[in-house]
Length: 175
Image (cartoon, rainbow, N blue to C red; front, side, top):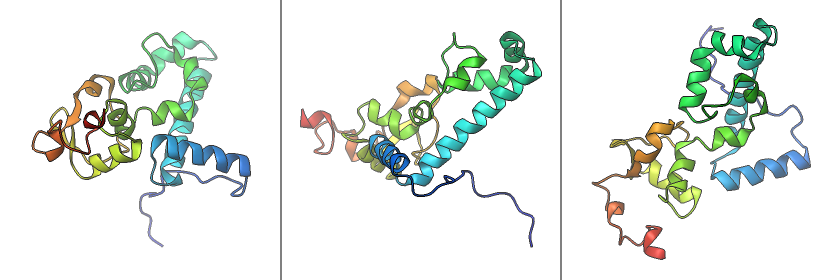
């Protein structure tokens, strides 16, 4: 047996056949244009890791939120940089986060919210096909987390045929 790195970055549900959970997952998949449930499970695992770190920091500080925030300054700065927490939120707010808070920060969702595609699925296709850039850099990974200060720089690549506002696939041309 080889001892390599763990390549699975998510946990599957403990009970595979729960109608209510399956319906909730299907709703999130369609709402955020996710390719498969693995992408959702990755977001849920990321949220679990964030909560676990917040609980660890609060435990080290024996429940003192200010001391815990000082201990986890880099952790909190990262959450604020990615817009998962706002500037006035403290570390206890991380325990109230939902998976939608993580999904809202995906490149695909930001592009859709900025009017890149008519649907989240179309925004995903434009990203994967290299028609969308962040700050001028072509990035083709729809699951990438977008920082708050990068959010306004998400736009069509200037060399893409889709950069023409009269292109038939552009959302603006349909109005």
